[in-house]
Image (cartoon, rainbow, N blue to C red; front, side):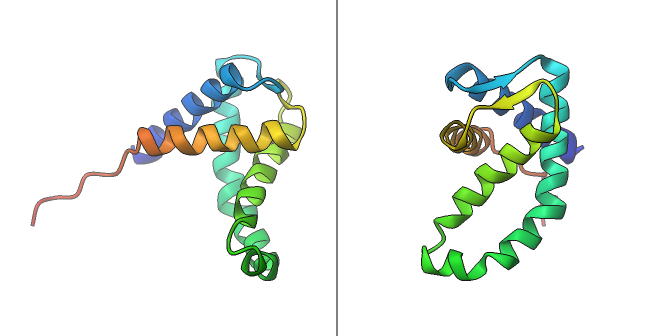
Amino acid sequence: MYFLLRLVVSAFSLGLASRLIPGFYVADWTTMFLAAFLLSIVNAVLKPVLVFLTFPITILTLGLFLMVLNAAMLGFVAWLLPGFAIAGFIPAFLGWLVMWVAGAVLNIRPSRPDP
């Protein structure tokens, strides 16, 4: 259930980014949910490997390179999925920023039982 809620929040934030940022295009609701699902898979499988491989750069930039890596993951999903397009690095970075803020505002955590 938690995964579905996060998927809806991610799809909503993708739609919000496509409305706010020129150069960030999502065709329809189906593409939005597919992009959110594919982004969760890419973040679970590919991102840890890239974080490990780029660890020296991340240390040198005091962690700021992770923002670039997140934008790159978003760009990779746009490259894979037809109907989802990003016109360069700046729209990808701003799209990631909108998704991050929307995810922080709509932060949904699984409920824990009271002790």
